[in-house]
Amino acid sequence: MKNNISAKNDIYPLLKLAIPLALTGLVQSATWFFETLFLAHLGPATLAAGSLVSWFFGTLAVIMFGALSSINILVAHKHGTNDVEGISFIARDGLILAIILTIPAIILLWNMAPIFSLFGQSGSVVALASSYLHALAWGILANFISMACLEVLIGVGKSRTILIFSILSVSLNIFCSYVLIFGKFGFAAYGIAGAGWGMTISYWVTLVVLLIYIFITKHCHVYFKDILNFNASSHLIELLQIGIPMGGMYCVEVAFFFALTLLMGLIGNDLQAANQVAMQYLGLFMSMIFALAQAITVRMGHLIGAEDIHAAKKASYLGIAIAVVLNIIVAIFYWLTPDMLISIDFDIRNPNNLALINMIKQFLAICAVFQIIESARIAYFGSLRALKDTRFTMLTSIISFWCIALPIGYILAMYLHVGGAGYWWGMVMGAGFSVVLLQWRFKSIIRRYIK
Image (tube, rainbow, N blue to C red; front, side, top):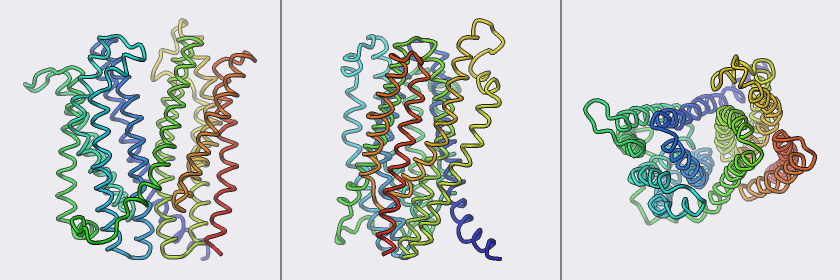
């Protein structure tokens, strides 16, 4: 009976949040997959321009996502105390933060051409990338406002609603991009700019539908009833104090993987291609773990708000265990069925691909180990975010990736002649060290909460 109660009180509430958020992560990852697929049909120069945009906009998006994620942390704590009015004031300030962040984002999108040129990109590729970014700039305001509203709903535990709106947005995005890139159904063919306009249209349509849903749905409208009330105290500073380190952490990690891609390219093009396949699967499955970490944050926030610290601690360890077990299952697939995974990208029966396929198998085998450790690291991030500790997580990201993984990987690859695999073993070591640091930090902070 005790185990049943434990499952009902501990496992089910966490999974109820985590499963829709994990599916949301997978759905959202489809956007760039299809954009790449569409642009590949327009030629190498267009695909190269699309790659530039995806790296830049991906970096910008994760920074802004990290900053706006502070909304769900504060909302989760207020939800745990049933403070509906407090949630509505956080929603108000979250929307203000989204609008503030829109300004530098649009300026960057509109003026990236000189920066791309500075990094040695050809004029034709820069021109194509600029047309993409200029079209995308018109949708940034809608995207950020939608993100802020959805973070409020995540904080109160409405993860299924998030999944529904993600499916809507991604479906619209793929459809509109396809129509405008290739000129279908009587529309003009805008080429790569059509990808930007497709995203912009999907952002604005999603925002309109989301706002209608919020204001006609009583159980959602109540959390936004004070967004025009500016008499109450502001949470904007607290949102920035929590959000900026989170955005910085994501920036540090995305920048590392970009640097990894460049370093692999210095060793050889085949090695860079092999690394990209491993990164393809890493990104796909880790999106689920990031979603699980978000669920841990929200669940712990509810429990901490209700002053049930022991249950919050239990939720943390349970979430970490689920993340690790999921990635052990993924690792088994990497180890036992690499040919099936590789065949999606390359013809494994072509003898000309033999060397490349062997490199990919090597990277996937190490990636499996890295993902198991990394899943614990990301889950601990979720736990510490619930405790409003985001600066330490940013510090550990800097240490683990840039001070441990990169130097050790470089030594293994270039001096000990391990090759590209050396960088992956460096990542394993960096992630392992980070988990030790994060576990120590979590234990010390949760102990203070219990006292």
